[in-house]
Length: 493
Image (tube, rainbow, N blue to C red; front, side, top):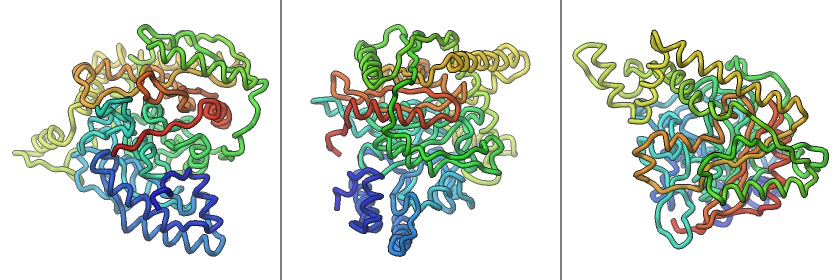
């Protein structure tokens, strides 16, 4: 039964519909894999054994009647940022200790309506703030990948590190994730999985714990491009409860796979050739260009001149919105409460004990840039830069470019508890250098595995698309995936 966990969603879907396997068998295989491996990988913060088995039994009943939904019987992991009714939802933070919402996020409700099975809640950086999944109050997630000949634990990337590690380590068929500055695409690149951050407004944010509301967007992490397309189709919807969700039809993304790239124009931005970029990342990028050219696409050099301002502007806008969003966590109505001599002292004691170091850092940065005397100098200026970044992309797309190809990350996965990274927050923030522009402009971006580093670790390429043109990203990423082949870690856990 353990081999069932190696099935892709599309393969498992076919076997379930043919009644070659049952949802109960598939779910039990994943639960057994989680119980055996989670002590080492720390991908799950809560495993919902009973709920999963009950949902699987209901799926089998529907499948027996020929009534299965698009994801009927498919076991998924859910990032701890998504509200799940009566199930642990803490954003991997002590401040939400014991919180079990009385509601279901729109994304997870959509998945359950299509027949998916919930295996549990996945670890993440606290409040989605991090690039290595080391800021969780539940401890770090360990990447299923290791460098050749090494036993050193590596980070899976962040903030959706639990989602990426669980998918790469065969602990779920697919996972929900969120991306505020690269938190889907960077961990996907670090773990050899596929992750897509959809256009802002494509997927409802209702019921998802907020980090930076104008940047956050939910999306899937999956084993291959087809699985990511299947998951996004179910996750996406308009939602009356989210005024930023967009009322437009959700395409059949899977149908775009296998279509020709002839006549497409792929842009290569010169500004993404950053100082100190490893030779193997540059070589991977060139290889990606050749694959797309061989598939019939026209390759054009483009300029996105305001790219160099994206990272500093992002680290003003995101913390500013975070400081506002996180003001609600005060110990009064739910979550952690630390007693104080009066209500103000209780607020201070609770927030000091409940938030981790990285979250405190970003709240303080955000509060500073929004404060009197600094608001115009920092926050307003960062929003003006954001407009210029968005216009760079608009100009390129207006000139006929269909998609943009870049590296996904500036390196392969680095070591857990890396002293240099953890001692220098800016060095850690630089992991987002290729991804934050996409969030600032509200565009869709996908990371797809494209090769291995010299030490045998996965490396990813990123495709950036026009607004609400995820179909072109899936179509193009599928070409890269077929050319590069599939990558899996050697099991050691």
